[in-house]
Image (cartoon, rainbow, N blue to C red; front, side, top):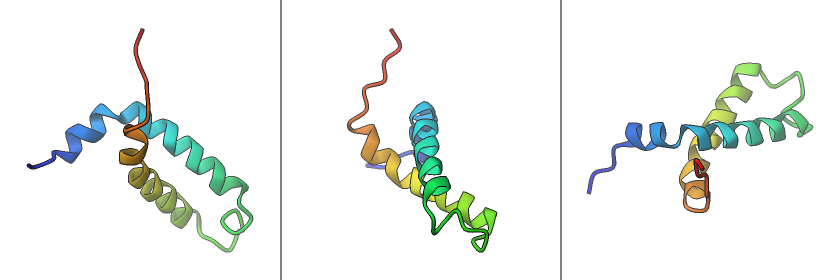
Amino acid sequence: MEVDLISFFLGQIDLFLLVLMRVSGIFVIAPVYSNENVPMITRIGLVGLISLMLIPVVAGTAMITAD
């Protein structure tokens, strides 16, 4: 069974943006990652990577409906 990741993520783009905002908020507040010694591109990459890893976990529990 082959999973098409692009169609999966395009179908979950709204959920990805919600997770991205949550994770980026954590990185802004966390003292280790909000330090100026950590480059901005590293923080952006970590936020994106963690968000991508959390999408399958959150997708099983999310109930976003368009009513």
